[in-house]
Image 1: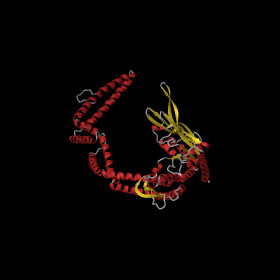
Image 2 (image 1 turned 45 degrees about the vertical axis):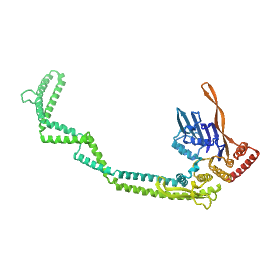
Image 3 (image 1 turned 135 degrees about the vertical axis):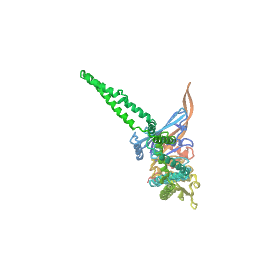
Image 4 (image 1 turned 60 degrees about the vertical axis):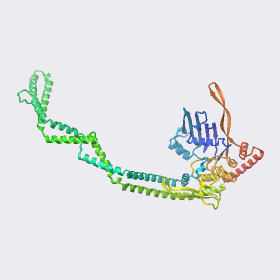
Length: 580
């Protein structure tokens, strides 16, 4: 329930604080007095769409703050959002609007914590439902009629519609895959031909290791210079270990030095480290001599092997130019195209497989759509009976109403086209609601529809903006009774021009415009300017009687007051009858 609202610099409102009560609350006033501004402020506090025109002219900051009584759904939302309570009985929703440097910004908060648009949309479902002017026009829209039918069907219908939406997405994905495959079949076949050629060429190349080319180039150098390498290795062996020319080799000289050091060691022990170094050098020279000798023995002059190596090098360089630039890149590319070729030629990617997948997805979609149609038919039967019952007290006791469910192409919302069919007079055929009902009948239909949803509506506050437009007399009295009846289970806020509706309210507010002198600060002092503001006054007693007299079209004369007094007595009797 909406307990209070505080507004600063919103539209024509400079400052306003207002408290609401349980049951039926009505707002009355002259046309254009600003009654709808209050409803727009409530919508703004709950995250409704705004632009810079929502701010009072000349203001750079505006605030709307609405305080609601807590309910179970709101408590659960607060826990999910990890928002602490400010008070154990209320939740505060606020909207701050700022205009700076030509840019309009607004922020929504709940209990002082910033909340995004999606979060506010979820919260408002548990707080307020606003039926605005012009919504009767939307009654004729098939999409909205389908939405209302599904909401009336409750959780079972909504869950089945969720399954339909998922099945529709699956069917669309399968169709897109199939159409893509069909449209790209020529390209696919061309790609397969190219990949098969490239895979064959790379497999023929027998690529093994990324460094094969470097190894082959080293082997090529060795084979091309094998004679020179043999000669040099023999010369090194002669120098290090054994000289055919009779000259002392390195090993001979080191051996002589080792012998002399051994003799000297008898007289000076400090030479021991030097002896060890020489001995180690002699051992290394002897080992190097053995290895260079073995190296020279292994070297072969093999022209045929050299030719094979050079040919392989050229083949690998050609592969690198086409698939490289390096051999490692060529090997990686070979693995990649083999995988791609397998995917393009695999059985799971065939047209037949995709056609079968699409057929299965479509069949499943039609099955879940048929189940949804059956659930909608059950809900439609219940809604028809309930709505007719709600319309009878609204001076429409002869009305006929039917929810037509016609087949349509499957979408994410099912395979049904919903049509509300209506006949207000006996003997007249059922026709689409929008082309049959008058403005007054549409208003009553919408009110009856809201009454049908009142038992399942999670919102604790229902807001109606001139739901009684286009009606008068007995019909207005029936609407007043229905609004009061709704107020027994919900808080109801209603903008009205009907005296009987206003008389039925537990709480009555008058909305008016007032022209005031506004002081503005200018460079050389203060300047007085006339400004229009909206004022809201709670009415009781004589003030309320005078306002009702104004609504009847008369002046505040004794005769008008007498009529209003009888109207209030009548309203009290109707309220008492409603509560029995």
